Structure formats: structure tokens, C-alpha cells
Amino acid sequence: MEKPAKDEEEATRFTDGLTIDSGAVVSTDGDWILMSGPVALEGEIDNTTGNVNEVVARLESGTLTGDGALNIPFRNIAGAVEPGGPGAIGALHLDSNSGQGPAGTLVIDVPSKPSFDEIVMKSNVSWQGALDLI
Image 1 (tube, one colour):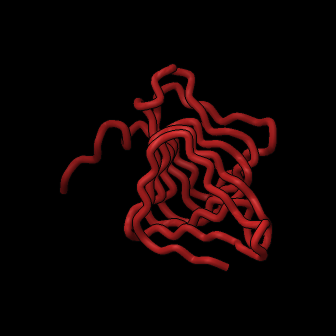
Image 2 (image 1 turned 90 degrees about the horizontal axis):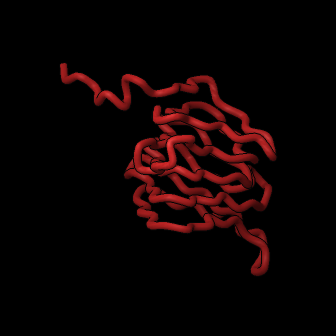
Image 3 (image 1 turned 60 degrees about the vertical axis):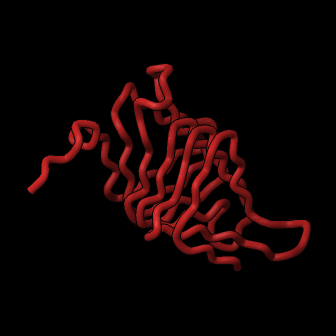
């Protein structure tokens, strides 16, 4: 069996979900953040190293919802990203290189022409996988 990358060995793991309230910041000083389960992001995920490329936040399963900001690279491995949440309009901010793999799903609520979910990007974003428009 192949050994995991050192970054994965030293990752901070949230296996039962994570809630980051508005105004709150979850910071890392160089460890990756691996998330599973329901992740409610109203605040921010950031790092303290000053080098955003040292860390990655990964959604390995579950659903990421909310109106918060990911200020470090983000990868949706096999979960669902739904700005706002089910039945709620929202905007998730991706401030660094981000992406979604083939097993991930992006869920966008579009209840009317002027009202819809958003992914607000400040950097490169590469999306694969499913796109569900509701």
C-alpha cells in the first residue's frame, strides 16, 4: 500500500462535519483541512502562514453550504457544494485556486431569473463532475 502524502498525514480532519459561524475564522498554520459530513460555512477558512499554496481544504464527502469564504485552495473530491444551502440563495467565495473532481457535485438554486446561487471566484476554478440546477 502506498504511503499518503505528508500533507495528508498532518491534516486536520473534520469527519463529522463542521460549522463556521458568520464572523468566525478557522485558520491553519500549514496543515491541510479535510472535511466530511455537513459543512456549514458562514465565516472563513484561512491560513496563518501567508503562503496560500501550502494548504488545501478538501471536501471528501458530505455537503458544503453557506455564504462564507475559502481563502485557501479548495477541492471538492466527492461531496456536494451548495451555496446558501437547500432552498436558500447564497454565495460561496473561492479566493484561491479551486476545483471539483469527477465525483463531486455543484448544486445551484435558480428559483427565478434575478435570484440564484453564486460561486464568487477570485482565482482559477476547474469544475468536473455533476451540475444540479434546482
